[in-house]
Image (cartoon, rainbow, N blue to C red):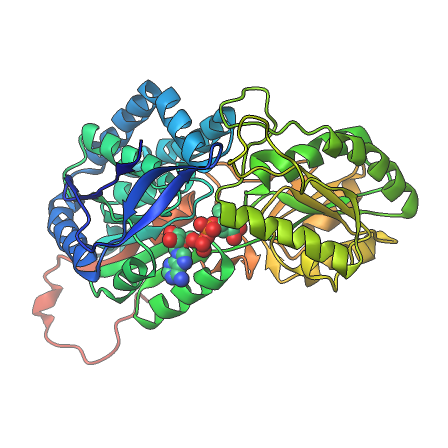
Length: 499
Ligand code: NAD
């Protein structure tokens, strides 16, 4: 049954008024699930107005009270975990067990945000000068916004709204129009947890809504996650409008496999990291770089049967390694990249293009694909494919291997598989990528560290979650204070010093 979704503005469920809708499908069956209203400029403005008024009293709530809302939210998500995971899997296509991980990695940032009374503390210097004290405070920005991608419908919205709201801001969430239902449910749970109306608003939309957010003078900061062209657009336009903006974009994550690596362990890691969630993760491994011919041949001998044996199934199948892709359009795009790789001269050793899921013929499925002898000039190497396609680029030696991620335009995640601590240390120091794994294929930092890619994987100077999130969502005010008799001493025309 197709349902019509709604915006959540000022704590109220509001039907869309623009007359424009996007379709959200169920990838495992290919059926239409919901009509998603696409907000107009006026609807975005209404959300911002509401948020602006609500934020004033939220900002002056003491930080423990703000944290307690987060604590209650954690309990409510636990209560509804299974329903949320199922909803997420049905709308996105990932398996239910993987959807649970999506929720969990978001909750960890909410847990971190419960520490806001401590995290938001300022600094104090007693007697910085005669009778003079200096202190700083971290004040919220006001109304801030998050624009999020389809692939982590629970985790990334929580990464954004958790710290922002804990810091005392009001938040406008513009989730992906392809996976809008879980973000909406999470916002409703925040209200149930006691968040005042208007502090977390969900506005669905496309470029029209995003541009309205970018242009609204009362939106003070924007956190974006999605593809690099859109990240760059939002960063450029948002900063030109004087906003604080952080944008996280696409990726091409390499895994180097050194001759001394445990190849069985590396194979397990590469299969999971390359094909989990059908490769639709910004931290998925998409390029494997075995060092030396012996390593490459031995690794290929292990990878080929494992890719052939991957179990693809509907999102509800607990035994499936991965499910369908998010939309038919994306499925066709990924398959066309595989066609391109063949045309470019790479060796397609496992071809999953023809895979059909029995009983689910209209779903968006494809099997795993494995290329050997991919070279840096090929488009399948340069561009993000975002599907179950693993490319092997052979390198003669470590330096050649290291130059691959270093020269690539993306710099999100990278990994090295080795038993040599010296090699791993050298790699971690010299690789030009933001997040590094040593025998860890998907090095997503935990909530109390920060997450962010380099080069064209990240725009802006602060990462998401961890201490950077508190810096991003607050502005520092520094007060120099004197309570002396000295004020009576008369005016001074010399710059004050503490000497
Ligand atoms: P996307 O860029 O298509 O969409 C992201 C958001 O931007 C959505 O909310 C969408 O509605 C909006 N949007 C789309 N087109 C727009 C336009 N022309 N103008 C304004 N807004 C627009 O990305 P996606 O397909 O939803 O997500 C996949 C991408 O996200 C991949 O490139 C992946 O690597 C990246 N990603 C990056 C990270 C990270 O932290 N670096 C994490 C997850 C996903």
